[in-house]
Image (cartoon, rainbow, N blue to C red; front, top):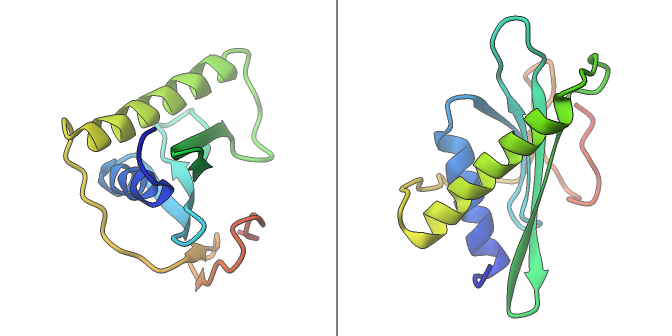
Length: 131
C-alpha cells in the first residue's frame, strides 16, 4: 500500500470499529496492531483476527491472520472460511484508503480486554496479550 503504516492502521481500526460482527479485544496504536474476535451465529465457533501494519519500502504492508479461537474444534473448510474473512477485511481497508468506503476510526489507547472484561494496557505489540 502506498500509505504510511499509521494511515493503514487507522483505516483497519475504523473498519473494525464499524463492523458489527467484530469485537476489538486488543489495540496497540503505536505498534499498529489489532486483535479482533469475530462474533458468530449459533453452531459456529468465533474466529480471531490479528492485524499488523508495518513499514514496507515507501509504503506499508498489512498482515492479517485469521484462525479459530484456540482450543475450539477445527473443520475441513476452516481455511477457506478464514481466507474469505481476511479478504473481506482487507478489501474494506483498501476501500477506506481509496475513499470509496467511510469508516472513521475513533482514537483509543493501547490496551487489551481479558475474557473477564477487565481492560489492561498492552505494552509490547510483539507479545500477544494474556486474555
